[in-house]
Length: 602
Image (cartoon, rainbow, N blue to C red; front, side, top):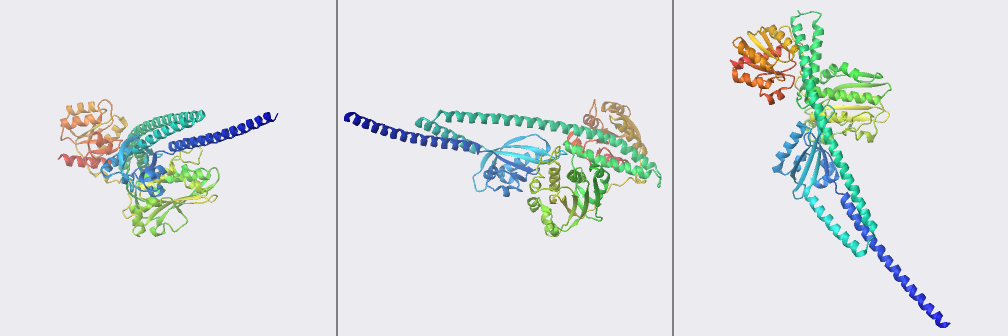
């Protein structure tokens, strides 16, 4: 019996030792599992925390937004990147090509890819792959450029490091007999990332289709603007002729003046459409801000809600600003529309105010600056701070709900909108236009107390241009001989024939280039000049122009088109200073064109 008890005690001791050994082995296994999990987490962080550098610049390449990866790539903190030229980080031998890339971006909406060498601060140059695409505003104007910079050398280094980590992970799993669930989980992670990559590729393809759609819309807008210019030419030409035939003091003169002014405003709108389609250019010159606001009175009243009251406080005798009048009107329309939306269905007041502000008082009021960096680097801003250039300002104030600081910080972001149906492009377009004019934007807002936008433009000493109705004595110059008019639009041909007859010419017309050449071959000696349209069926204006120059090198030929002179110059090679008229034009424009043409041919 004592032997059995002793054997039992020995057996229990052996079991205890075995249990202790088993517990120690289990602890070692837990430690091994923990090390494997740490290595797996390290691999996951390395994979997930390696995004590309992402930047947004304006149309001139000035950085407006940059992420942390861009900051690390360029060796500059994000807040110091904003307002700097991205080209400054490109090595000198590549800067010319890089600026050419920016120039190409502003002329079309295609995405572009290139490889450039960057020079980060206090680091060696690195090779990066650049992918960029153009952001357009609501009117189709170039507003910003989106950039993705991919460090190719860093990518290779990361690939090598990932492979090494994979080898280490495989060895550790084999050495410590890791749980199969870790490998399975790793496989699931890779599958999810692969799915995410496929989703990103599909999104990129959808974006490409969207860009192509915008290009199609641009082509359509250009065609509409061209055809609309032909219609405006009929209206403006006939009104001009009727005006010239009226005696001074006739009751019909004032309505005809209004017709001429309205038609010229409509021509401004078609130029904006042509610019949207890439077939036009904005005209910058002296602008009287208060005068432009008065001209927009009827349009602005129709743009606001019926519950809103529009109050005018326009200063007189203001200095001019150097700007494109159409873009200035776009700024006003966007701000007025935004103010009307802020009122919603409630009654309220929208105040439109202009005035003059000395440069030293720009930051001495309750307005909040939203463009300090742009202003700091602007020559106009420096001139203003030195007291040499005051600002002409435009204010649009509403009595709406106001904005929270969170909303205020994002209102100029493209595609950000607080409206259900908004596109989020209006205020982004305003910011882009103001920056291109070296202007400033200030905002005063408070929840429940309305919002006031103040836009400041540098004042200039040049007098603003005004549209004047034709005077009765403008048509004193008289021509002689027969002018051949070649245009496929019957209404355009008729009004041009009347205009030619008013200034002493006889007129013959042809509906296309082929017919015009046949008429010219039959009666060459009687024809002293040709008015030729650019866009025609059968034989185009471009081909007709080449034939005329080849067969009749000394015959004055004046090109005319609903497109701008730059488009005609690219296709035909004429210039506005010698032989081009953009529709719609008036009799005095036609007289001046023939004067130049006859002088050049003599």
